[in-house]
Image (cartoon, rainbow, N blue to C red):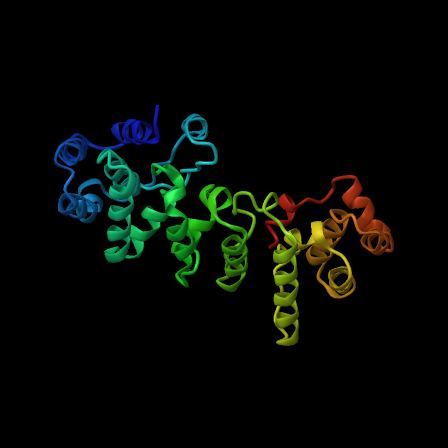
Length: 286
C-alpha cells in the first residue's frame, strides 16, 4: 500500500462520520477534477472539518509507515495535517503538475500549512524534483517550519547535496533546534561540515555563549589538528555532559592525536569503551 492508502485508513478510524464523509467526498472530487482552486479550498477547510487532535498512531501503525516508506515518521501528525497530506496525494498529480502545485501551495501557505507541506516531502512522487524546495524550507527562520524539513524527515539526507545539507545542520544550531532528530546525521557527516561547525563553535566561545554539545557529533569522525584542540578544550573546560560529548567525538576519530587526547582522560575513555555513554543518552542533556 502507498502512504495515501495508509493516511486514509488511519483517518477512517479517527474521524467522526460527518468529517470522514467530507474528506472522502473531497478526495473523490479532487481526483476527478484535479483543480488547483479546489485543492486550495480543501487545504483551508481541513482543520475546521476534521479538528486538530493528535493522530496518536499506534506502534503497529508507525511500523506500517516505516515499511511503506523507509524513514517516514508520522508520530507527531495531527488529524488535520494527515487530512491535508491525504488530499494532496489523492489528487494523483505527478511530474511538473505536482511540483507546480506544491510550489503554489507553499507560496500562499500559512505557517501551519507549510509544516504539513514540508513534512510530506518523503511522500511526494518523483522525489528528486523537490530538492530546491527542501533547501528553501531549511533556510527559514521559522523554527517550526524548519523542523518540519529537518526533523524526523528522511528527505534531506536522501536528496540534498552536501552544501545544502551542511547549511541545514548549521541552521539547526542557529535556530536552537536539536540535531539528534535529523535523519542521517551520522551518515552525512563530512569534513567540510566539521570545519564549519568548529568555526561556529569559535564564534560562540568568542561571544561568551554556550555551544551545543551535539555539535561535536558531526565533528568527531573528521577531528584532527585544530578540531582535536577544540575537543580538548571542551574536555578541560566544559560541563560534564559536554565532556562526555567530546569524549564520544574523539573516540570516533581515526587521528592518533585524538586517541592520545582521549587517553589522557581515562574515566571518560573507559565510559566510551564500555558504552556507558552514547549520543542517544546525551541527547536528553543537549
